[in-house]
Amino acid sequence: MSLVETQTPRPVTGRGDAVVRLENVSKQYGSGSNALLALDRISLTVRQGEFVCLLGASGCGKSTLLSLVAGLDKITGGTLDIGGRHVSLMFQEAALFPWLSVAGNVELPLRLQGVGKAERRKRAEELLEIVRLSGFGHKRPHELSGGMRQRVALARALAQNADILLMDEPFGALDAMTRDILHDELERIWREQKLTVLFVTHNVREAVRLGDRVILLSSRPGKVIEDYPITHERPRRIDSPEVSGQAAEITDRLRAEVARHAN
Amino acid sequence: MPIKYPSARAGLDGVSGETATPRTPAKVGVNPEGSEVSGLDALELGPQTDRGTLGRRIWRNTWPKLMAIAIVVLLWQIVVWSKWKPDYVLPGPGTVFGDLGDVLKTGDFWDGVLLTLRRAVTGFGLAVLIGTVVGAAVSRFAPLRAAIGSLITGLQTMPSIMWFPLAILLFQISESAIMFVVIIGAAPSVANGLISGIDYVPRTWLRVGQVLGMKGFAKYRHLILPASLPSFISGLKQGWAFSWRSLMAGELLVIVPGALSIGVRMQQARDLSDSSLVICYIIVVLVIGIFIDVLFNAADNALRKRWGLTGS
Image 1: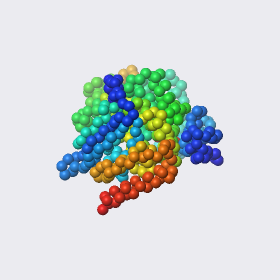
Image 2 (image 1 turned 120 degrees about the horizontal axis):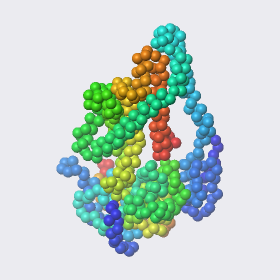
Image 3 (image 1 turned 135 degrees about the vertical axis):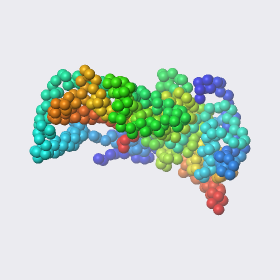
């Protein structure tokens, strides 16, 4: 992201406008007889302020889809339109840089955008407060727990001030208790910061717990097989009967899909 | 050591900020004021380990070394007592340490040490400069790597003493001849350290760089160079070892008139058949080598600690 790019006026979007639009997007790796079709004609729209969960068994190309939206990889068919919006991406690993302090990591995106030192420091402090880690700025990443590191990664993603937050199984490596806490946090931050989130997971309950919509992908090649609207009132609990009930329904559908492939 | 951990439920409440639960930061790692992290997170941070006072730590590290030295000196004394060689060829530790004490008192000796160290620092400094430039260039341009990548590793295995005949022909008996060999001995290690550091930057970090939109110079400045630092430091350490060895060989072979370096003094002692003095200089060279190695290790350890690469 060059300085020039960040200074171009952003598209003005109100809540409800489509911010990510995929039409018949395909992704093929290699060519000829070695070709592997990872994604097959995916159509999907994410609206401003929406929390969309992409759910599927391993190998369904969920992560590939995020890489495409993030612009880390190129589509081989269809159209992908994010209207020139900025995206940030969070991974399963916090992937913080050990040579920087916690605050330094959060400041890095701002530094790359050419934000001045005082302004950067102030902003990083605010972001750490948002993820409830104020007072930890001077620490080194390795001094934090796994859950705290993921909070820092979230703060770093927020520092990019992107229009769309892409999350690739961000809580996949955490224990259930920590994950539960971070679900609450993410839901709160999403609401307060009015984020648009595209969240990839293979955990059905997590998807139902967090999403406005859960989009179920089939495996090899990845294809949208169902789009579940989740209407339960927020804040939700992962162990509430509503969430469990709907998760069970989606799990059955997912199982049928996995079984189809096993044969 | 009994540690009172806050309950898991306390963590949930603390983080969601609904109920204020009294926290017990007594012995639980770091817990700055105003943070909302407790419970599981605090538990994972672990207690600070008590590593004893500084004096005790130093003693714990020192006594095995003193013991090792004592054993070596004892073995040496036993060989001398056995009359395997006459005293004037292999003097005992008493004689040598006596002579060493006398030598250390002379200003001449320290001038020699200073001269040798100045050569070492200059040669090593130039080697670092050249090695870094070459290493960066090789890792940046694929054709260059294909061309001289394996040559660099080859140079590393080349015994430095093999360069002296050529160096003397090129530069005559001069400081330049010594510098030439010192640099050619050390630069490949420095270059290789940097190259492997750059090659093995973890993929996840590279992806983060991509997501943050790092390109060109910014990518090197903020990602590649800091990430390759540990490997670069081990390259420096190895480079130093090679340059020190080359320098010692150089000082014995290339005797520049008027420059009474450690090597020259040792050579003079040999010419006078003064075994005791020869051993003195061996000890001096060894001690300097160990001292510099300790400095490199300290830098390496500090970095590892900072990055959390040690087993906590």
